[in-house]
Length: 264
Image (cartoon, rainbow, N blue to C red):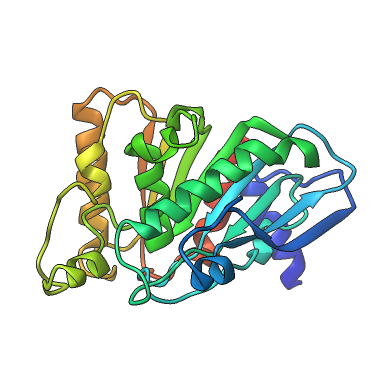
């Protein structure tokens, strides 16, 4: 009965069920061709690739885990599996072993790896979505809105098909504020804030948060402010979804919404 309910729920959301039946996971692929920052970069800067072995021209979701830039590890969420798309789960270096902007540099390097390599696995480079939860959403927005990070790899951020984040930080991340000696309750918008780089020609952006009364340290309001600044800058394709009754941990209910946007 539980499986039947889940099937009906996904169909209502408009999530397509893949015809492909064969999938493969490749673990721990280094995404820096020539790492130069020592052992920790070599150990940490790896990704996992999950893809259909009998499909072609499928979309790819790049998934950045949460953890406040100081914890967490890559994993392919179960809800992404067997949906006819590729999923790339990324590890990046963490505080306190590194400080800003290393986290953002790693995110950009991983996105660049996907653009360069996903075609050989059957993926369509015109359908790459950059997504993440919490601080992973923060990294997704930074590499998509601040164009300098991908330009290092001769990529335009606007080649990204779409950005979909769950409970993302849109002000300067609280761990970076900690590096400045600030308290988590002190708000800051500087060049390490996605909202600082809000622009009208950015890729389509979907911002998903928990309930504004239950979210982590004003996360809903941060996302609402980013959406407002996008609209002020004449950005057309954006939306903000507030999931009532949920706090910060919204991946279980947020991923089906994410998949619906990939499929449309």
